[in-house]
Image (cartoon, rainbow, N blue to C red; front, side, top):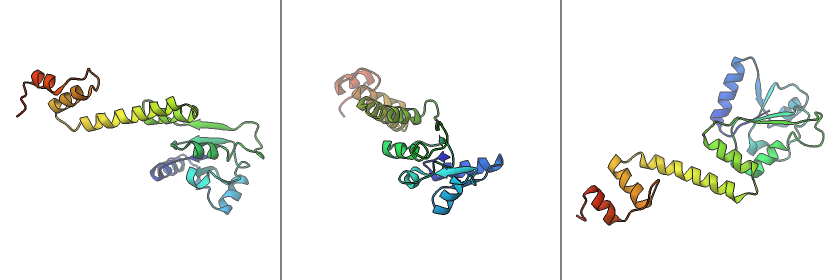
Length: 173
């Protein structure tokens, strides 16, 4: 079973699985759920919004792969619980996470693993904010970037407008 978040990810999964000889089907309708539980679906695709609540799909498999993570702890836990529940015939349910090193997924994974920790949430927000600030600064000239960084103390000690003016030879005009 593969959980995805974005439609374009779903399309990529289907395309790749087709190339390697697997047929994918969404797990949404009662017919698809029946086929999944009967072992008639090689690779099931599940969007957390569509499948997080109330689906009984534990008979169809015991491996869940998160292709794209959700920000919602509730959707994450409920999707995992579609396989890890009473009636599961395997002794073990295996949950894999495809997480790109250095990407936002690492932060999301940290928050999901440390759900009760406000520190994890703060870390993710700070990381996300830092990336957005860097993206915005990248649109400026080098001189403008330096002035903004010095004024707000981004990666350096804050400076007053007077100090920045002296450093760059600027006047109030």
